[in-house]
Image (cartoon, rainbow, N blue to C red; front, side, top):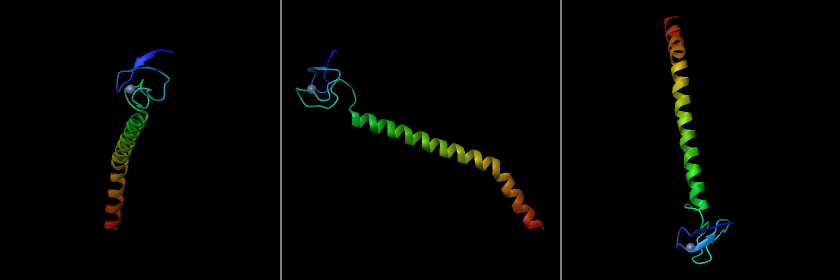
Length: 78
Ligand SMILES: [Zn+2]
């Protein structure tokens, strides 16, 4: 157990403390609150999800666009 300054008021708090006894800030030993960390991880997951979706979509389009075009051309000629 070690003491670190509270991120909000600078009061010495235990690293395992859930709230600062001085100012009541949550997770005083951490630079970011639990909610902020959750929001950041959610944002990162969202960005990765969108990137995978866009990348996967572009890949599929590159793979299948010629096939689809060929099929359309074939149908048009026959
Ligand atoms: Zn504090």
